[in-house]
Image (cartoon, rainbow, N blue to C red):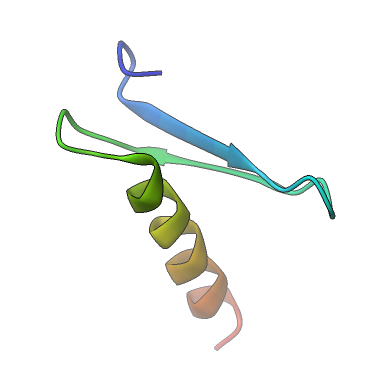
Length: 44
């Protein structure tokens, strides 16, 4: 949602979802990368 500066992604396999703040330079891969980073941080 570019108007609200929020990126959203969901997994079709496990039905988990993730949202993060985005800016005008953000692309879908950036949202995915933020999700992976958050997963790694949670598993430390």
